[in-house]
Image (tube, rainbow, N blue to C red; front, side, top):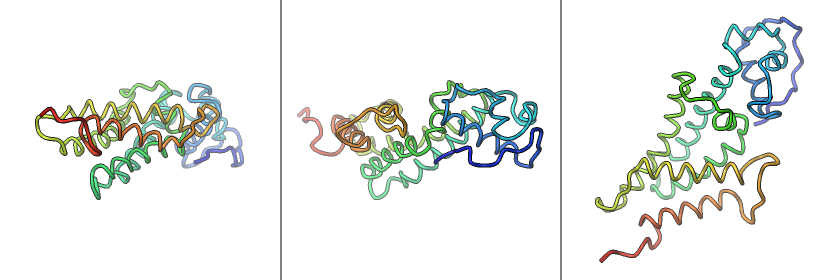
Length: 218
């Protein structure tokens, strides 16, 4: 999704009925152009077409604006992951690979949101809404881990939280290094999705899920 400066500027001091949404749009555009820490609150106001004082009606400062953007990003992220997981249908392994592709697609298609979520340095405790949205997004990953672990014998199941964190770290690393939509993307002889699929298959087979799995202890 592109957030361009393609709308007319409003006169200074202009008040419109959806200022908060305009400020979020402005922040997304500036994040895409300058990064999450490369713009000021005043610049967001100027791009939204209002006076420097107007944003204070909705946000305490730039950090609170970024926290709102990050919250919206996590909500959209959760929705994308939940759709991809689709309650583990038709089977957990297929749904899990679909989930990984959705993770990379969100990072690529929504770079401004993704940057606000993971690169802006906004603490999750900046607002209860941000923490709740972030936790729900991670819960989608944990749910998939729990479904996959359930395929293993009772005595050979790793902790679901540990597995979810491993998969998250792998997905985030591949998205950050190889799945970007900007000049920071590293070249690969394959797609980022193919790299993630190969990595997760190796990881799951090491646990004994899918493929031949590790050799039996018997």
